[in-house]
Image (cartoon, rainbow, N blue to C red):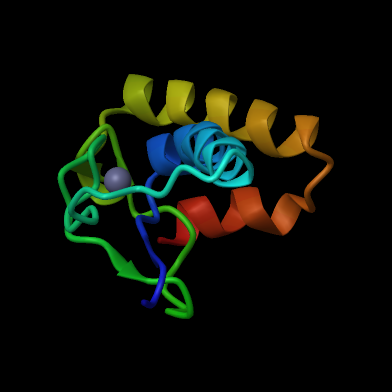
Length: 100
Ligand SMILES: [Zn+2]
């Protein structure tokens, strides 16, 4: 089955923990028996194919980037910068967030 994903910040920040738990369960022979996610559990948007080339982040806390207030945009940028700079990702990831 095709892996699906969301392009919101919360997905980025949270899914690694779920994937880690699933991998750990797998090595113990435990298979996931439930239904797959259809919508992002954090922002509620429908999940997209992992090979989709849509922008990295298009919403923040369920709100489209274009509708964010100055304060929300500022805190979104701070958190996102921290995330990407911590992971030593290139600054283009952060720029793409604003061009979304
Ligand atoms: Zn999402």
